[in-house]
Image (cartoon, rainbow over all chains, first blue to last red; front, side):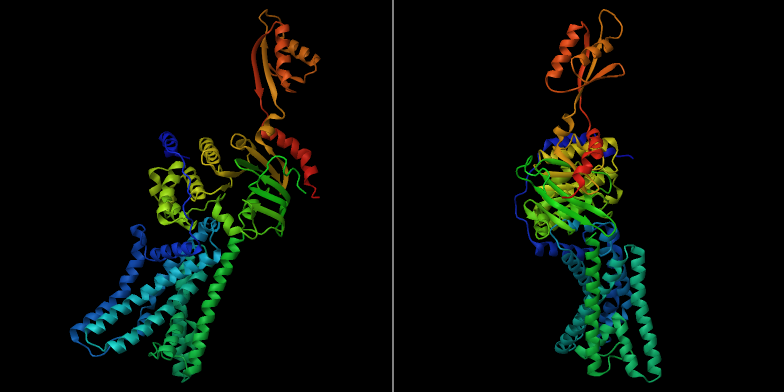
Length: 299
Length: 326
């Protein structure tokens, strides 16, 4: 094996300067959490990394923003007196782009440390494994929130420019941002479980994109059939089984928005079921992720 | 009960008492009782002897089945987090992400160890220079040679200036030159840097030049622990080569017989004699006898026994005696 740069000149370099001790402060777990979290958020968009890591996430962000920019352009030119597209429906319309983003970035953020066993280096430091998992999950959720939330802000600015009522627009925007936050957490949690289970990047990408898109297609199909049969309640509850329709249903229940699917959660009970189901899914995914990492850590 | 505790090391950095770890299929550590002092300590054992398991327990990452252990006077079961902020660990296996540079990785890990951003950057640059990574530290690790990877692994283990560092098989996969460099670096960490080192190897010979003390474990049990000097000097021997200026035959055998008659253990070995050193007087006896026979002394050399030799003896005899847990 060729190890050319290791001989010769290096030795003189080593002996020139002595080793110095470190007696400065050592910060606690809050700092290490923040370090991991901040780096994770940056890496979601390839920031601080080589150009090739920026291409895909930035492209996805651009595609996410494009429709919003077009809508704003039209709004301002034509001076429409109502929204072309409600904030709350943007995520469902763009779900393919969001799915690709999470499918590519979750394995990069989550399974990389497992695959290359970098986790060992984290574990040998004063950082608990749960803290590590929460930091990674939060970073992914934050990255997703930016992806889903930024176009909403663009739409909001456009609406104000075209003279729509700031009061109702702000209320709608805040509701949609709440929905975006819930969606971000939901997608981050489910993608983390999948990425933590498989260390193969390709498998993880395929598994996440399949899970997200398939679940949505199945839900849409079932809803279509149920609607045709007049079974509105079945159509409504079918929305539980895809992260996108689940969060859309929660928005309907919590912020009284218009459903993006053919049927939202049926009544107040339906809304309650949707919220409870989302809580169970997120909590379940987080617990499974923690369990998985604790198992790896215990080896 | 402690086998030799308190006799050699007054204050120990690592103390284990009856430490036992059983996995469903194997007993990894079997009532292990050791004391490790400052300086460089070699932990020697065959693959699967329990070296890595011991390190993971000492880091507080793996719970022991029975027994106790403390590192820097901190209990491994209760104070694992504090231990990990004051020690460093270089794992045996590959553990580096390919897509970041050594600098990026080491700065990040320094911060994870609690160093503020500026200090993390400064110390990373220092430490990478000390382990001998120059310009290549800005390139992605994926393109590094095994030797460079080992250096990065070593750098991350000492970047936060720990009081003690665990190095698990640091010479694994290195060629002879790379191995010598690594061992010299480890020696410097233990002396110049003032960081206590526990370094493992399955190769007995390579640690004798590097370590102050050697602990030999086999099948999770303590085989032997003492200073390296004791290990290698206890059974020293002399190599003696003579010639006869008068040209008479067999000067070697004549000297051999004379020395044997004076009570020394002598054995011919090719053209030379191998003489067991009993004490300091052995040298004088040899010198006097050579002079008495009128021979010319070509070579009088102390041949240290290698750790291997002792290990063979220990494995055959002491190992069984020590192994029985009390």
